Image 1 (cartoon, rainbow, N blue to C red):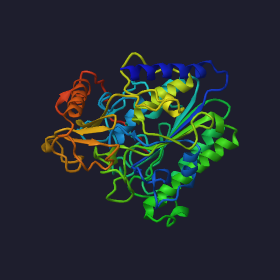
Image 2 (image 1 turned 45 degrees about the vertical axis):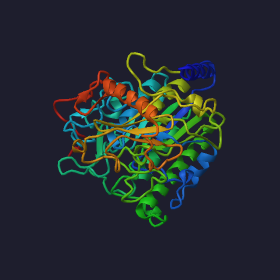
Image 3 (image 1 turned 120 degrees about the horizontal axis):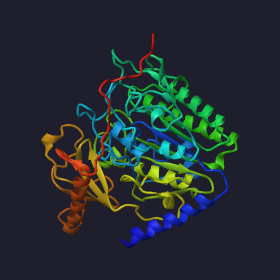
Image 4 (image 1 turned 120 degrees about the vertical axis):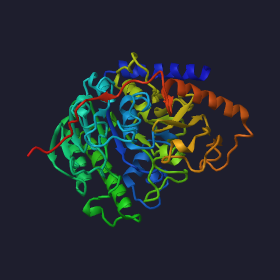
Length: 462
């Protein structure tokens, strides 16, 4: 309790300079890759992908080695980044048919009543734009332009969701401008060009750019000039194109004289599928699972003069923390009329704090609570295998306790030797079940998702 109190006090003291400073508010850029594994970039150990720009970004910034997505699949993880909440909190953990992600022409989506990062920053007079994969609903009520973004350019859902009734459209704001871009090898270049254009157009005022890449979700479509350039086939080629894209963003920031005024954060929505290509090593597991490889993702943060160069942190952080952290550095406020699960991690990013900002973190796979972490300890809960045919952690059917500091690959179950730790983590799990719910058990703290009676997907008007 004392540690948490000191952490909160330090957070308050660090907010003051931002609120009082006369200098301009910082620009914020979040680059959110799709299915990029923990070890798919140089700063996290890749030997097959050349990522010189990200390597340089890490030398000039901070690596978050224990940074998590809140769910090992697309839609839920994106809802957390936008709202600062667990997917179950905002009821975005499953779609209307109890599937793990939203599909084209969904009647469900992110509730417009939720407060997003973009909406908080709009209150601070930020220009806001989302470029890339949205995947939080394709009805106008759920699209980025109704969630705090001034503009949108991208694909509303995953790269493989090309349907006869609803092709994979390229959308500007709310209008489809191309019917299908599923195998368009220029998509990353188009996103990058739009991002550079946005940076230049808003160089005189603070801006928030959210760039959720289509890469490296299947099908793999790297740009032509990147084909054959890696040691890992089309997957590696596309990773290297992402690195090129990051370079273009940094060139634009520096050309506009914004380098010292811009925080850039690079991460992924979940781990690599691994059986296909890519790597989550030294973590166990892959996309769709609550093993570390499914949910612990690479994260690099850079802000010259504010985030210590060549630094790293093993604090227990995740995508939910971005909303309260960005509220802090922009001089805004985290909502107080609802529960926000994220924590302000500016003390960590600024190098002023090293402790964990939370007592526990919960690993949900769709509607099922599968594990809980507190400090270095991670406990897999006893699960009924009949309740989940997909997304089960590897080989864990009973209680299994791991010390992640000593056993990052989750090989040695030490539950028997540590009964008090197991008891403590079970108490955290039960508190989560009461608040957020579990299989066939609603949580008292859940809020409603958005819902429309008639679907309205983005279609090209003919």
